[in-house]
Length: 203
Image 1 (cartoon, one colour):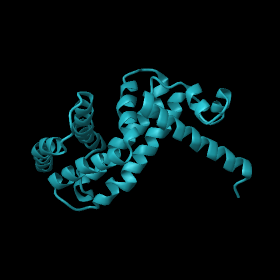
Image 2 (cartoon, rainbow, N blue to C red):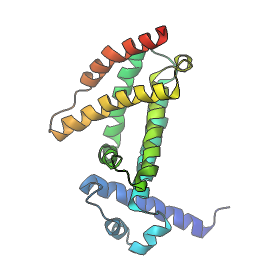
Image 3 (cartoon, rainbow, N blue to C red):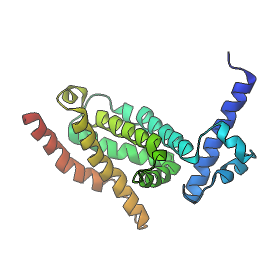
Image 4 (tube, rainbow, N blue to C red):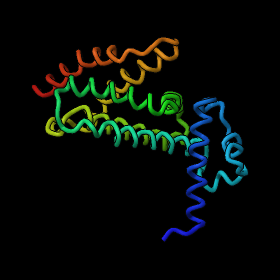
C-alpha cells in the first residue's frame, strides 16, 4: 500500500511536470530554468533533483507523456481498417485534434526535436522517446496484416517521412504566422505514400 510520503512525492512530481509544461508553453524550453519551475510550485531548487536528474530528464518525461496520450487517445481509435490513404488522412486529422487539445505539446515537440541534433549524452532519453513516437506512428500507418512484410527499419523510415510532413508543415506554417490547412499535408501524403506501399508490396 502506498504511504503518505510516497503519495506526497508523486503529487510534487506531477506538480513539477505541470509547472514545467506551462512555463515551456509560455517561454519555451530554452527560456525556462529549473528555478523557474520550482518557484512556480514553491519548491526549493535543490529539491528538484529528488524527482528528476535534470531539466532534460523532465522534458523527456513530458514529451513521453504527450506521445503516450497521442497513441492511446488518438492513434488507437483507428483500429485495423481503412486504405493507406484513409489512414493517412485520419492521422493528419488526429494530430491536429491532439495539438488543439494540448497546445503546449506543439511547442514541446517542436523545440525538443532541435535538441536531438546535439551529440550530448543528455539527449539519450529524449531520443528514445521520439523513436517510440515513430514506432507508434508506423503501427498506425500500416494495417497489422501489411506490417508483416515490413522490417522495423522500413517502418521507421516511412514513419519519419510522414511525421516530417505532418509536424513539419505545422511548424513552418505557425512560424510564418499562417493559418493551418489540414488538407495540404494530407493531400501530399496520400498522393505519395499509397504508391510507395504498393511498390513495397510488389517487391
